[in-house]
Image 1 (cartoon, helix red, strand yellow):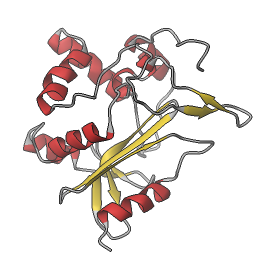
Image 2 (cartoon, helix red, strand yellow):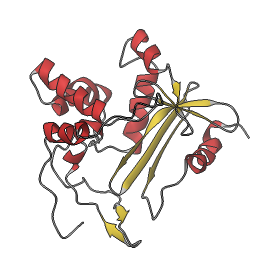
Image 3 (cartoon, helix red, strand yellow):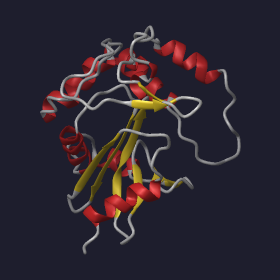
Image 4 (cartoon, helix red, strand yellow):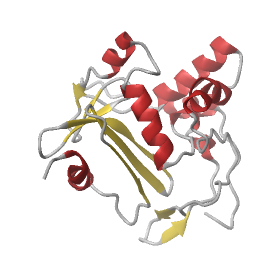
Length: 216
């Protein structure tokens, strides 16, 4: 909460300790896992010998000209101008959660970006500029989730009301919710949402997306 100051940084090993303290469900169903992204960040650091944030900037952000995207580490501030984030607490009150320590998500979601930069990223990724054709094919090979989308390797596939499939991902951290989509014909849509007492449903979000991806 703003006024109380940010929490101390959470190291990746501490995040994994929390994750591994719980038994994974053995029900044969799809489950989303932030832990995989934390492990991926640690692998980047092990292989390169450099902080994963530096490698993200060197390999992706700078080459793509994503000047308004950063990996903040444990810096609690946001570059101006920015939207304020609010989070409901027990009892229904909304508190200002803008000032936070983003290390609580580390490689699983601490990045700060803009709608324009997210459009640039997904355009580059889905047109094969960032990875090999084989890797992109694997990313686009999806399984059913029962959550309103299919999931590949780091990519979500959403059906629209008109049948067009769009690719992208959602992201959420305390006080902020983002959806970034791109269709194979090059149309894109990025939504930055300040959650209220309840987050919008997938059906509500895709209703908005239909205006962009479905011909009227």
